[in-house]
Image 1 (cartoon, helix red, strand yellow):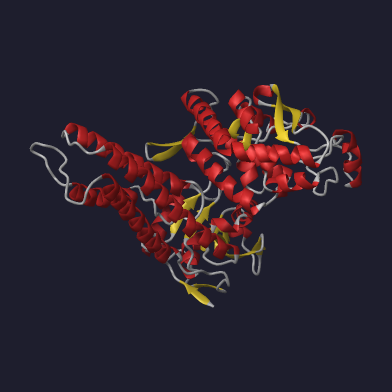
Image 2 (cartoon, helix red, strand yellow):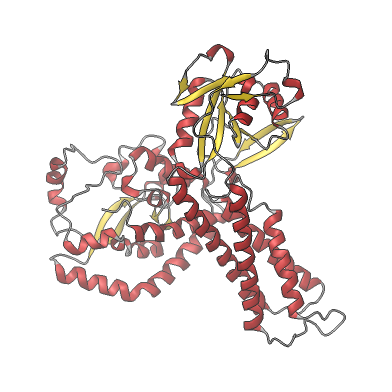
Length: 501
């Protein structure tokens, strides 16, 4: 049994004495101090290496001066200052905050933001002070350092994910609220073990407390008034408050006071799901935190930027991959009868029809045999995101192409034509679009993509509901930085061949 005593002086008289509960088996010890230390060391090595390479490559070791005037520090001095400033910038933006490391894009976004802002400041200061800092020096240090930092963060994250898949390196959470809302939150937290949250206990309103009860498999450890004491006794990292009529703003305020000094975070959940940070604006009004949610926009400057990035990226990939495209075309042409490319009508942005290209991976009469394949798998018709797992129409070469998604490469020409984007929801055929409800129709508000959030989240292994949710979330919350992350994750997914058939 574990004694749970009041953690704040105002709580001492709330209950007759000490509350006792069985200590949950999932109680965890903090994992992040040593993890943050390793990130700090890795970041330092990356920055020192990048600045050192820029110094050695761009300048001689003898100490070239920056300007011929009042200011004449050596590049060695500038390198030292830049290194210190870079590491300080990463700390100032809290890029190693325990609540963002290990999952999601925020950690990477903060690293990216700190880096480009730092070098923007360096450029402005150099201009104002007339310091002749070589552009080549900055052009080497900035991208090299950024890539090394992100690669280091990614490597540590993969290491962390492997341990979380084994049930380790979790942050304990106590959830409070009404049973129904608590159960939904527990499902969301436990759905993705790599997010790193284990629910240790539940606190519900007094009228819902009963002995030896659980909610979604998690023990009920007390009432709402016991939340702070339960969190401390179970060594939880946070108390998550679900929306509840029983939890007033004053109760949440008191809970925050009770948790002061306990190193336990207070997290408030909202009923609104799949809304990312760029669309959320917090504005305090008379002490009340008011959250504004911007409506998603599907035109404007960032879409122009996306179009430019798509075209430049697709053109570069076509040039780089042209030898591979030629080899694949020859393999398809010489191993089975039929055209090299397969063109199929798909539905794109705003319901516009276009012809999507792929390397042919099936026999020439595949379309005529579709009904037989569906019947063999017990499927009566085409459903959303449905794809046969053991399709006999796929050729031997086609199976290899599909395994590594090489059959999709001709869609780079669709991107160049403006029909598709590098990143976006996968384009579907008219029979699937005809089944769309209001939610699914959101997929048609942007150009379809060569890859997307659905593909890097499991592809055909995902349920239709999960795939649709991923696509709609992308459509409404995308950023160019998110696109870059998805493209990077696509490489990993293709190599791992997960969900490909």
